[in-house]
Amino acid sequence: MTGEFSESWLGLREPADADARARDLVALVPQPVRVIRDLGCGTGSLGRWLAPQLPTPQHWVMADRDPALLRYASAHMPFDGVTVEVAFGDVTDLTADDLRDTDLVTCSALLDLLTEAEIGDLAAACAASRTAALFTLSVAGEVTLEPARPEDDEVKAAFNEHQRRAEGGRQLLGPDAPAAARIAFEKAGATVVTRPSVWRIGPQMPDLTAEWLRGWVAAAQEQRPDLRLDDYLAERLGDLPTATVGHVDLLATFG
Image (cartoon, rainbow, N blue to C red; front, side):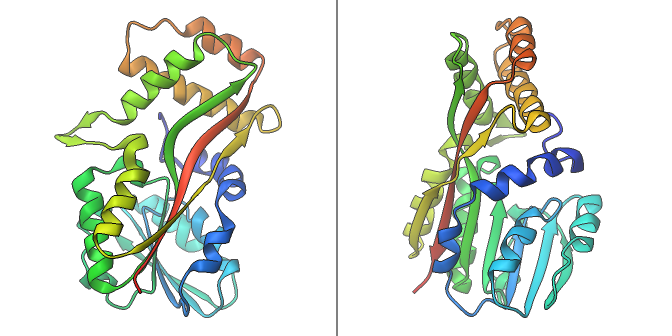
């Protein structure tokens, strides 16, 4: 999605993310949780959602490969009893040693950007360090628009193909990520619980809905240049639909 990691896009989606995440999984996180490592933290929106639901004190390690986002994330965790440090780097470089003193690993809207092998490595690092993992908002490939239009299914299929694209020699999982993560963590010895975490957006959130539509259609057109979607997008933007966008939250724990 164009602007996928920009501060403006992440800010637009934060309220929808917070509404969608499966709160009941938080109650299943093994306690105590004192140190949390947030992979691909972006602006820190997951931390702002999760920190108030966990006992304090907490220490968050905000990890990302974008220094500007790290600065924003570290400056916007305004909670008593919560401290923050930043870690520059990519999730694919994570090792069990990085998690040695970590109680919980988190991420949001990240697993679908990884490969099967990378998710396997992530599960192995968590297993070796016995670190629980709470991974939220992995794309599930399910989109429903109301009112429906004939082009919707074709756009959805092209978008999902784009999510599974090969990029820089890496085969991204896209909507196959939730199932791959469950398999990888169970193979690593974890108990895995999943929940649907569905975005419900539409005219009540016009800026987010319009920006999501633009990105959804742009990715479909990039994957399928033969599609002619200018009129479709213009009509959708002129009369915003109600959209449900499927995601999956996953909690993996080690006995």
